[in-house]
Image (tube, rainbow, N blue to C red; front, side, top):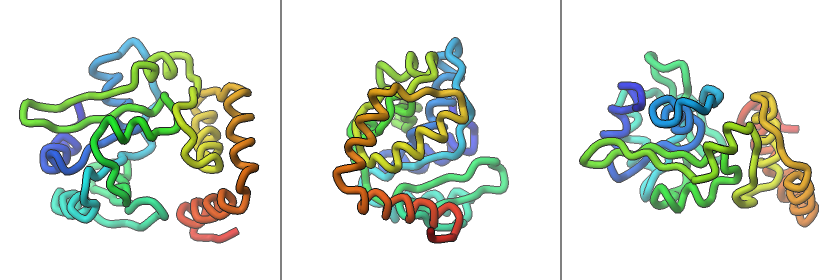
Length: 195
């Protein structure tokens, strides 16, 4: 199901990490749900189960080269991949507990490696949300970051229900300085320029 480069990485990660988000969505739909067209992944997100340094060591020993750091992840490149890879900085536990913390159902997909092969996991609502190109709220993690992600999804033809937007903006108003600081860090990580 994943490309050979990513299949090798997943095997090497074993029970110590997995891939979740857009790349997992793209590969799962291509192999198991081909009737629902999804946009191509922007990157590959690796989630450590327990020890982020162990995941970064596996990524490095798999031929990926460190590129930069973001507030929440390290970014890696590989000569045989057009996509960058991000190793999330905080341990997230197992696949299910990680997906439960995803903000939008449309991105709740994961690929992991088990002894018997690759395991594909996704939220029951995710295929329908991708088919309809809508962003259904799963949980509110960081409203400012979620609005930013909603804008990225909008460029791919997704819509955000008005009620969801109001809920995000209402949460944002509870502590605007906290979320503005997050957006500043996010912008700095992407552009190298502080606002």
